[in-house]
Image (cartoon, rainbow, N blue to C red; front, side, top):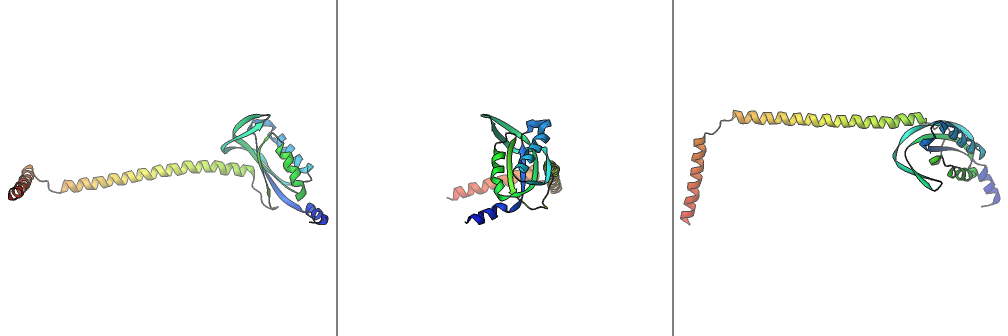
Length: 192
């Protein structure tokens, strides 16, 4: 690749989205840290075009962050995103800056389009909705099992009614059938 092609590639502007999980122990400093991350984006020749301030969300699994040679475990994180436009050449320096930031639990940097936006609040509501959906599905499942239990009870009642309606054999009739069966077996043995 010629020097001219490399220079042209460095001038190409692209829309990016930076999704962030910030450590939850920041509490009141979360907004300040988020503003600092946006400053890093602008410092690396980026122009912020959209953002969603971080909101605390539960994580799907526990994450570990090593800070000053000590491991910290987190079950929640503050999630937010920054959308920006920058040259493709600036991305590597941005990644280096983000990798050194101790308050970022995890991040993802994606190419995007100018019109793709979902707020962190909407994502948080969606995640909470999943939990509500799971509870609702569990209740529906229990109700279905209870309905099946009722169906079985109704079937048992039908069988019970049928057996009550059928004429019962008397004890004498049963004894007579047993005696006949014994006689038949005894005759077979004698014939042999």
